[in-house]
Amino acid sequence: MSSDNIRYVIVGNSAGGTAAIEAIRQCDEKGKITVISEETYFNYSRPLISYLLAKKVTLNDMPYRKREFYKDNDVELILGAKAEKLVTEDKCVILSGGQKVPFDKLLLAAGGTPIVPKIKGSNLDGVFTFTTLADALKIEEHINNHKVKKAVVLGAGLIGLKATEALLELKMEVTIVEMSGRILSTTFDEKTSSIMRTALEKRGCGLFTGNTITAIEGENKIEQVILKNGQKIPAGLAIIAIGVKSNIELVNETPVKTNRGILADEFMQTNVKDVYAAGDCCEAKDFLSGANHPIPIWPAAVRQGKIAGFNMAGSKKEYRGSFAMNSVELCGIPTISMGQTAVEEKDYQVLQRFDAEKNTYRKIVLKNNRIVGAILVGNIERSGIYTGLIKDRVDTTNFREQLLGEDFGLISLPEEYRKHLVTGNGGVF
Amino acid sequence: MGCRLCEVHCLVQHSKSKDIIKVYKGKEPKPVPRVIVEEKGYLSFALQCRHCEEAPCLEACPTGAMYRDKKTGAVLCDEEKCVGCWMCIMVCPFGVIARGQETADREQTKIVSKCDLCIGEETPVCVKNCPNEAIVCEEIE
Ligand SMILES: Cc1cc2nc3c(=O)[nH]c(=O)nc-3n(C[C@H](O)[C@H](O)[C@H](O)COP(=O)(O)OP(=O)(O)OC[C@H]3O[C@@H](n4cnc5c(N)ncnc54)[C@H](O)[C@@H]3O)c2cc1C
Image 1 (tube, rainbow over the protein chains, first blue to last red):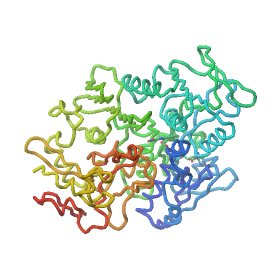
Image 2: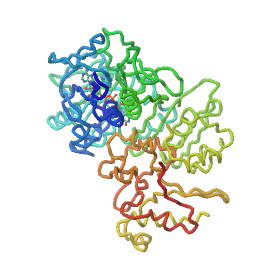
Image 3: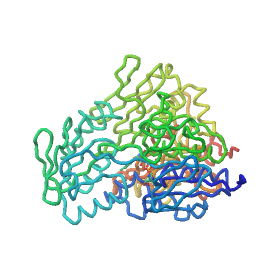
Image 4: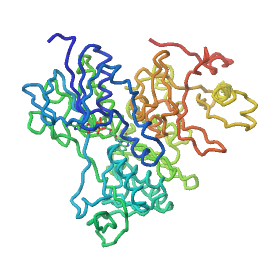
């Protein structure tokens, strides 16, 4: 096989997969790219499904790349087919219909699957997960068909809160049930959880923390849920959002190593040569801890897909790692949280400021004088400056007092670093 | 020197009528300036989108609103596609992407606002109107 027609195969047509296509085509115009997707939609933005449900966008707004994208990039798109088996010795994947797709370079960008706990009645009509466009459309249809006014959301993580945001927008009565003691416990600290809790409750949203659903009841379709504390909540709709697990089945009977996700090295390659992984299905380097860790967010999937694509096409690029970051707006209050935010250990220093009048909150977490986490509530303008300081591991000793200021800006930074930013050509990574 | 003329020219340029009187007299919504002036003591500088080669906002944008203009290389935001998720604000190390303007007839517009190098103009207005020639626009290879 000559080098000008390498066969690239990508499993998954979402953030990671499309970023890889773009990177491959920057280096290799001739290679054959085949993308396999279990979903039948041509291309859509997963984070937009909550906006679709809230009717803030329409189906036409869902694609994040133009219709011509696959044609322009000369990509063969196999939709509605599942890659069922990976045969690493023969370098091929076998699809649900039996079709054998050989590859020279393979990227697994298969994302994740929502976890559904064993709850009595979870198979009733009106109980949904919320991770795909199809889910959003089914939920919308269910709401319309049954004139649903009351909903329960199980899980107050990112997806549960995004679902809540949408349902509140639809003027529904929403109750959140969360196992942990507070909402978004993975990226919010206690203060932020409590500010947002107050805002949600003010808006009329029910919130049960330290609780869970033990049964869903109804005849054919959901009518009420029973909580652990015995309380009954009437609901015509339940959204289960307790978490997502990495899709690793495809490599289960192969030599490809996994932990919670498919393990990838700093070139996004797995332990098997020519097999790469990116996005929610994979565990790559966490920028802050240095260890492999799943970081299931859009920007990380894009970054990893891009790095994988470059390396697959022979242009060596190293992945420096990502860290968790979220932007969530609830009840009109924007929040941004990034990195390590709820630390207790002694070797972290925490700066924080709460303005009760404006209902704004800002917290910066430092380790060895370097920022490792931040939270902004209410006023999120220019929050990316903190992201940059985390990525560049800038020593903040000389400007620490200014870090919490509403007017914190580049002007507060050491001259050297500021000049590098202001007069450089950008591109922190 | 912190005269903030660039901010004035920028927001007028991005207003509906491009008429300074109408904008400042409140006859129409006053946009957020897309150039930020930072000042402290004697130090001041103007800052707008660097149109980064490896732009973090392009990677973070989940809607495809943020894109690179093929002809000019500028990083632009398609306001039709932007939903105001603020992911770009979260990752921009310069802090030069802002939430859209609040206007009398509309609540906070859920779109971001950033430098577009004054599409259609030969030179961005902040560059053209800087009395000190402190703002320059040059291509970096
Ligand atoms: C409601 C919601 C809101 C979100 N909001 C945000 C947000 O605001 N910010 C943020 O950063 N992130 C957000 N996320 C997370 C973000 O969407 C994901 O991190 C991102 O989509 C991951 O991209 P990916 O390419 O790794 O995988 P995915 O987007 O999960 O795509 C994987 C694709 O692979 C397909 N696939 C899987 N296995 C196979 C197989 N064997 N054969 C063929 N095809 C297969 C799947 O069907 C799927 O289409 C949100 C997610 C959800 C659900």
